[in-house]
Image (tube, rainbow, N blue to C red; front, side):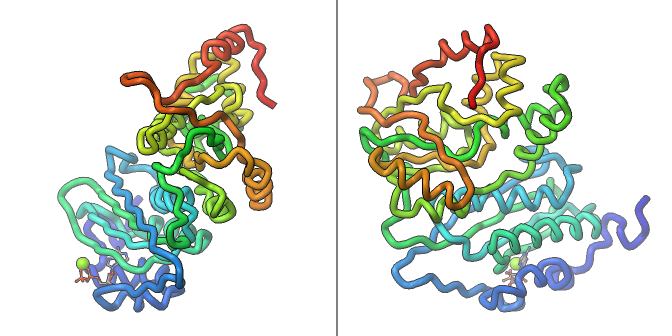
Length: 339
Ligand code: ADP
Ligand code: MG
């Protein structure tokens, strides 16, 4: 049931809309100027540089138009924060550009702003500005996140060195199998496992504190959005190296392990699927203890999954999974348990 005040097309004008839904989220940040000026003002700490990232999401492409609006807002904030996290950047502020279909209702915007406010507060990423426009096309949202990191210390994709150890935070595969659950797959899994996977897919947990804790210890880093193998391939391509990892070393949640035990064919999906938003990085092997301790101090486990090697011969893959066949076989006979 929709009442008249919540009917499509009954949104307030642009200025009232900004004042009502977005200015409260900007209130904690003086540089936002109350969203009443043309620009926002940002300071970067001395000796630091600004780290900027942006993501655009479109209804029907990156999410469904009837997904819960607060979750759309949170995922948008979190995928951007994940990029800052991988680079060891401290969040400063964000900018939001919205193209709203004319049929957008006030209750949709209300719920969207609520989710946005919650995440901007909990991740200390205040809203500093943006743009709002109407569209005859699909709902389109663009968030730009700005952070800061010590100058010259940002771990790039291109920083991996031969002999580096490869680490990944958290667990891998929850995002890919969560997408499967969202598409009504994996129905045979117990409900708590399915909801764990779905939650990890819908509301990823960007590893911001981990990124900060690892400052100075990391050679190359990327967040796992395209999938573990693809993102490791991005590091290898940018660094001109190869990577050797062991499938059995890749950290997996109970839910993923149980799903794999039931259906070994999911292994490829776990390693190649996306949306985990963990940090994948390379570092000096001799720093392993310091890295594991720094990670434990912020409550996020990191796991060594392999090593960086010399560049592959022309045309050969730059990411090699040493025990893929062996692990598939173990899974098929039902013997695999990680922990
Ligand atoms: P301009 O005329 O420069 O485009 P606007 O009238 O679009 O300015 O915006 C007025 C103020 O409101 C600016 O501070 C802008 O950053 C802010 N703003 C507009 N849309 C949004 C939004 N969706 N989220 C946050 N701030 C916004
Ligand atoms: Mg504008």
